Amino acid sequence: MVSVLIVILNRLKIKNSIIYTYGKSILSNSPFKYKDINTIDGYFREENLGRAIIQITDNTIQDYCYYRNNSGQGKCNDYLEKASSGVIHLLKKLKDNYDLEYDKLSEYAILWLRYKLNQKEPHYNTQLNEFYTKHIKNNNYYNEKINGDGSPTYKDIIDTKKDLMDIKEMTKFSYPFKLLLLLYDKNNNKSGNCDHLDNANRFANKFEELNKDYNNIEGSSYNKLLYRLSDDYNNLITKCTNFPPLPEIKTPPSKLIPALSTFSVIPVFLGIAYKYSLFGIDKLFQRQYIRKKLKKVKKKLKLNI
Image 1 (cartoon, rainbow, N blue to C red):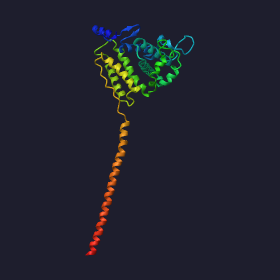
Image 2 (cartoon, one colour; image 1 turned 90 degrees about the vertical axis):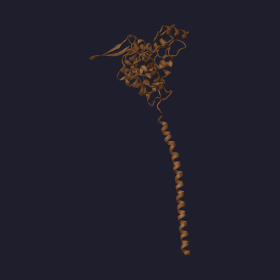
Image 3 (tube, rainbow, N blue to C red; image 1 turned 180 degrees about the horizontal axis):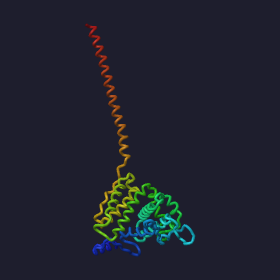
Image 4 (cartoon, rainbow, N blue to C red; image 1 turned 135 degrees about the vertical axis):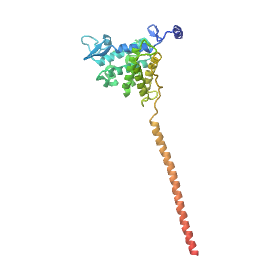
């Protein structure tokens, strides 16, 4: 069935499209996915209006706030509570619209959360594990099942990639993720020569920096997150042909191997040195023995004369 639909799409030359059946997507596409992430990102934000900074909050963000039973039930009372509610919105939206695997849902949720915390002072200092303990672990909404009976809870989904919260360098991914959100938003309906080439170059430069980082170990959470950014950027440049390509993801050589090589060479060198030193000592003794013999022979010759 899926293959037939793909053939139909190709014949009609429909690109960057998405098909739904029974509320689920068969073909997901990054432009739509990032459009949804950008929508949720706009649920709460700050706007600088010259001398004043205005806090903008969409009522939708209040849907998953359970913290207090005061007037205005379900109201989020601070930035962190809004971020917590936003994560559930993001998980639900991406699951409903694109039927992403749970580990991918978790990656996007944690990426967005770190990026969102970095947006506002002093929350960029908030550790993700600390946020998890205070706003996810015992949150009633996070302990509800995402699709009813038989499906995992929102917390279970986050837990599939909870190790990402332990990565000290997680904040390094916030900037390239922010650039991806901007690039998709500004080039949603464009192709060929897309806008914001300077930001695409910034993304490529930052990606190369992350690629060379010593934490980029094959199979690690850091490495998998790098692939996530790479895949989404490469989907973008299929239509934005003026954007620079990314380098191939390569894990940097381990610094441990040269050290081990050095230490392994030392005993060999010492062994060779020891062998030759013994050989040199043997030669020294031989020369001393010959000198003594020559002296004795000379004495005998003098006596005979």
